[in-house]
Length: 141
Length: 400
Image 1 (cartoon, rainbow over the protein chains, first blue to last red):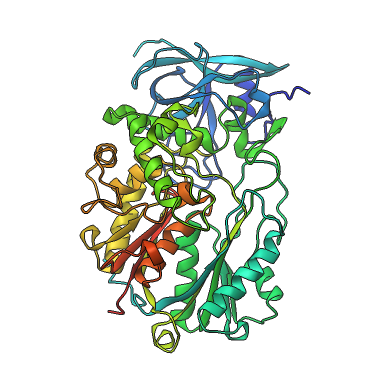
Image 2 (spheres, chains in turn yellow, orange):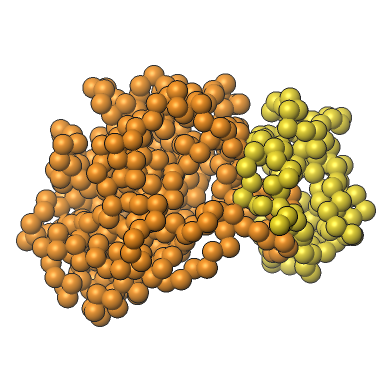
């Protein structure tokens, strides 16, 4: 039996993120009090510590730099069994120092990588109305 | 700046027991835990009725969808106390990560404060049927929605990302990890209760193994086992009347807060910044420094942790641990080698969390290591988990 990849279940906090992703737009939670981005958003802002961050999901450039990567040749999610080997990249987005996301790199498992390589967000359509952010190599600094 | 730990060297380990480690034990984990607990209490020269404190960390550390059943897949302190037919004054479970230093801290604090006189500290680890971390989730809710749909899940990519970050930053390669694993397995092969007893690993075997999440291969990961360990702790004053040479707890430190990240996202800089803080707290708390430690038993549930801990604790300069381990720096058989995996660690024993580190400190400092006994070790250090998500304890042979 083939197991499907897990799909995100949006909740009250994350719904705008997944609505934007479905349109292939990366929108990151931004604290309404201090203006800092947060991945992932939470009950309090990780920067100014307000308990009422009223996060607004703001479209970002989707550009960033590779900080690390791994080639997943065995996944603990059986839903990815048909996808291995694939590359996961740890990306620092250009919008804010230390703002990091992890996603699949869609350039294939043999893509040459170095720390600092530029990547741009891309999207994988996972299910009707659901797209998952990933990355591809390239993009301006 | 807060002063040295007031309860430092006031509490001692006075006995222990450890089960043989098997992939799957023939008996239920709970029954095994009761037997090991009774053995540890007897080893300390006590009877179960004397034990009035029970401490553990009962986390079942799997990313899989396995059911957690007390007495089967984990053993809580309450479960064990009831089966030993005693009514303790103090029962506690450590909730965080770095479970063994956290549990030691609970035991020490209980004894030093008078909440308990004799504390049994145990850890029971279970290897469930099926694949340990596999999870067939179809929907990712809560925090997992930010990582699982993206293919980032479980401990393998968790450790692979900072491991690769380290190798890339310092120009190192898998030979550094091989040096760690081969040393752990060499020592574990000498330990009768180890899963890897009489089964060392060569560098060639390591390098021939398939990489599963680059740069990590299966030998970089400790193997899940069924196993139980237990220690008895009491006050330094009471320890004098017991049969074994006491090993004193000089102090401990646990990781503080870390930057908020995606679940299991452990950037190298987070690990090292957290580790530097643990080291600062530990040296201040215990009054010792890295140069005083004869037996730095660093944690190795994944081999890259050894590099991270060596640097975080100041046994190597930043970025140098990969060279240090490849140059024989951690060869516990060499005259100048630092014995960081002399107890085999988790890689050389099996997935017993920080137990191999704690046990090696105890056995060596109590003079109970048998054929493996080292000369003149007086200060031991036992780590657990990641430097930014764990902790460490310093043990000494002297109560001052």
